[in-house]
Image 1 (cartoon, rainbow, N blue to C red):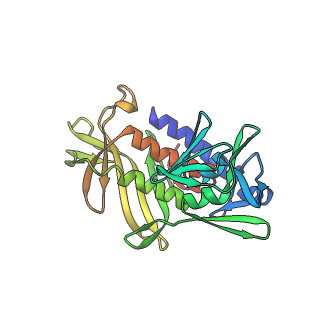
Image 2: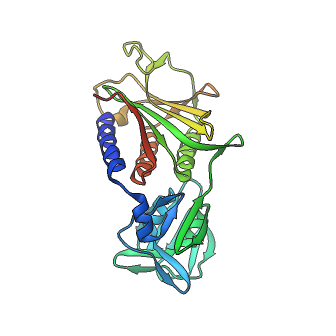
Image 3: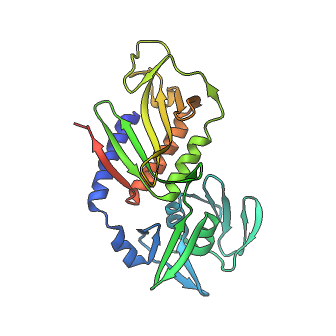
Length: 283
């Protein structure tokens, strides 16, 4: 079930936050993204004056997904699709031709690509300072105000947690998943809360609350995710989900797949040391 999976993820997150040391990794590998050292088991290389990096590691730190098939690497996030081929300068970006100045190459099972190409493709700026490479991703703005963190509250069967998620790429990715699922408007449920009376037909239980906070801690947007009263029957994929845009007080059909996308983004942020546990009522 989804709740058990998230409980395990919480334990892993706490262990990671206690033991990880991004600053050490930054010193060792020389690449810092939004203040976080890139953790990788392979080092960047310099070819023809260009910093070459393993494509999967850097892309995932920038909030993108990487797939490899038949010699082609496909890197995507919510608004960019970049396709590269090993040992070829010709590439494509959102279907349009795109020419590299250094060929990607395969070494020890890793595809190396020019760092600046990947960074700038996904909206990050590159700065070199004292032998270190700094990447700065574009911040998320909602109605002209910059988002600093997402406050994520989750309720398990017994207890719950409140976490803060940072990292511009993760904030933007999560916001676009939510906004991308606001096309199928529906009526508000008969009853809805953290603990509704699930014996009432049409009652929905809130499972996740996401608040986008600005640099002063003020809420810019809030999205609540609910599931139906199906309890102990079938799997989480069989549930009905609803998304509530709290500021606009509008309801939308949501999906298990979209919810998993939210958790994937959150888990990736945790892997990078960008999730802080604020409070927990877990036993």
